[in-house]
Length: 177
Image 1 (cartoon, rainbow, N blue to C red):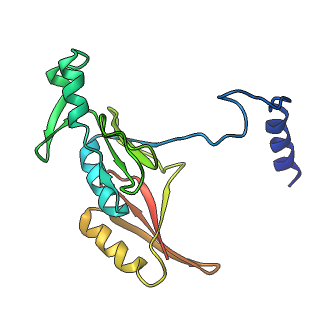
Image 2 (tube, rainbow, N blue to C red):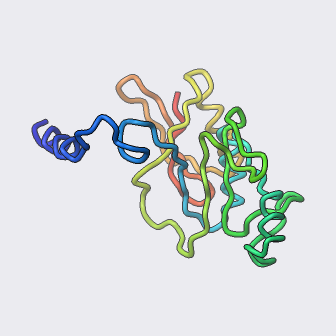
């Protein structure tokens, strides 16, 4: 316990002693997206959109604008499900959150899948827990398997139940009760 307090104390010591910290430092919430390295971002975007009830972002209008401006070339986009999509990235968003109509980019909860040259080789240091509820998490895990996930293990510990799974590229996540 003392070690944790000492580390937290060091973090707190770096906070500025001002009542007006400015736009970057302070106590305001910071918007974020989760980025997932992948070899096939469109495959993972479709899987995770189905797993979470999210939607795959439609960047086709934004791609058209960037292409007309010369900011991207023909090699930078492909066609996915009848729409132009970035070749090396795809994103999903909560359908209830706001989004930018020009770019198709969500302004709330998002996950971005980006191409990297190497495949996943070790266990995740960070993973998502999807909470489906006690009465349907097993059915949700079975549905996720139908979508391409792999069931790795099941747990019933300290009043919690969950299934450890891996997405189609091996990224671990948990389906919770």
